[in-house]
Amino acid sequence: MFELTFLGTGASTPSAERGLPALMVSCGGRRVLVDCGEGTQRQSCAPVWDSGGLERVLLTHRHLDHVLGLAGLIATLGLLRTGGPLGIHGGRETLSFVERYLRALWPERSAPLAIGLVAPVRGADALVIEATFLEADAAMAADYGHLTAAQAGRFAAEAGVGMLYLTHLSGRYDSDAVAAEARRYFPNVRIARDFDKLRVPERGRAERPSAAS
Ligand SMILES: [Zn+2]
Picture 1 (cartoon, rainbow, N blue to C red):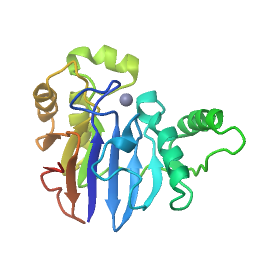
Picture 2: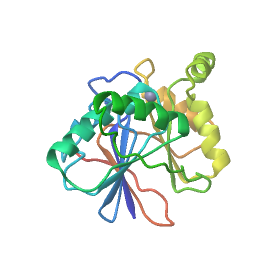
Picture 3: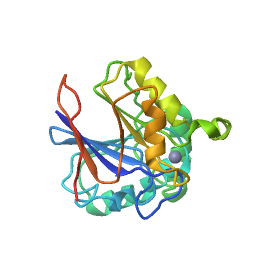
Picture 4: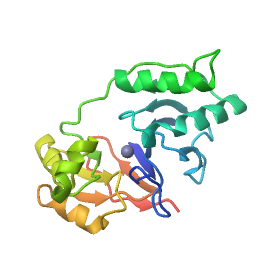
């Protein structure tokens, strides 16, 4: 059993309803943070750094809304002196960018970095993926390197996942329209909201989420 907690489900700019991208994956007392947008360390009833167990941060890509929260999180962990080194995983370009970003803040001692790989998604019980644009704005989505809801739905169908969770949602669209577009290609679609918790049993199908607060 592992648990997903959506800490931030917005795209590019925060709103009253949605923080910048961050998702906590918890399993057996260990935690991995996926993306760390600005303000992530505050986006939780129990703060991200609380109770230890945060060993790794996985960065999906180097856009600022996914990485700017790292510095604040690392500063807090340094003040508290909790736990061991924090492994930061991502693609080569992302890690190179993050290394330069952190070195500007801590020039003498670079933050601990470890390189990891993203596991394949095929046949997964739950897929969490961005749906920043609608198909009507597919050209803009391509320009910015983002997905449309239709592309996310088609990807979920091709990968044969159990449940599709859409996040990184832009304020320009109604979230019902985003879900409806993805559902044209894949039936089990949910829109993630900040503070949603999702329990994924081993070899099972994801349960419906419940808001944590
Ligand atoms: Zn983003």
